[in-house]
Image (cartoon, rainbow, N blue to C red; front, side):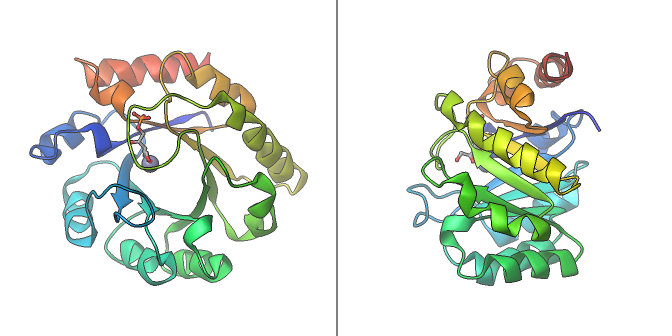
Length: 217
Ligand code: DX5
Ligand code: ZN
């Protein structure tokens, strides 16, 4: 499979979410950032809103939980219609059980690591996961500068997945744009989240096309 593009609605107009979701329907996933004001110093939206987004979105939902206690909450997002659910390793009490719960509910199980978290911490969990999200900014806000020094994490994960014969997806989130997407793909990333790059463009569909073309070049 080639690369996949996941626009982040963090940079959409929250008063016009349905309009802004339909504007990115050429992409592969709709990336939904759930923040609780505790795990990260920002607050976005939660279960009732995500449930409605799942109903109106033509794209499957890729929910990124930046919240405390994902052990309790992650399965609820699978229950209300998220196709992929990412929890943060740093917040999880029992990551293997969260991943197993997500898979048992039919969702893709994914685990994220912040820039300060060593990639070695997630390696023992790979057999339970369908995707790993490598944060390329500190989680919490859109529009931050891409951290190229996270690329060794992607390389390590890609090598580990290949050694295990696993079709593990690797997502990069933060600062992905025209000038950084090839760096991510070259390091092994294949699911690219882009918030400000896509929603900051006048023509969102054209920007998705441009990112896809650069990533597949
Ligand atoms: C940040 C979020 C990202 C954010 C990315 O914590 O997880 O998904 O929307 O925004 P950009 O693409 O603008 O860096
Ligand atoms: Zn995100």
